[in-house]
Image (cartoon, rainbow, N blue to C red; front, side, top):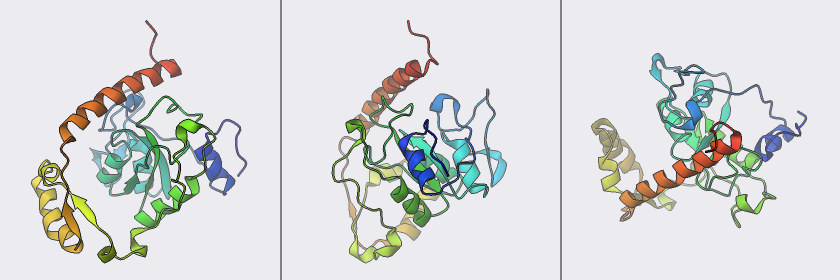
Length: 229
């Protein structure tokens, strides 16, 4: 499919490899929420139950994949906006490390925490799409040296050869049903699971909130959605 001159590098890379872009999807208003509710443009419904939300902010992307309209969709994630709707809709969502995906020529040009990510039906599909998106950025702001190696699906490497980390305090914040599944179904499958201390966990959440809110304000001013004062 021909590359449009207005495409961002990520979309251009996908088009050049034959990916057909069929449209854009809805999202939480201004990307500023995790519910996916948008009173102005309409709210995307969860395909598994239309009385439930999709999660956000990339709500429409997750709904499109979960309903079978498309095999994968892109979204942006600065605080869970790809991962949350993926979890709500039973999909796989990946937020790549900042600098692995070129975000130039997008509204993310002023961001240091938000990345273009993928929502797909399974880990293998998500890894495939991520590999197609990995191109060396010409803009130094979006270039992470040494990051352009292929993503391998976990099934290609036995869990016994890998080490996983968990933080009990973080897990304790989850709903009791999720904690139960983690203890009974996840832990037994990870023989090399070690406890990891996250001493700055609370402060990191405060830092993240301040950074992303200030950057979103800057982005919205750049896009003309917020009047300069």
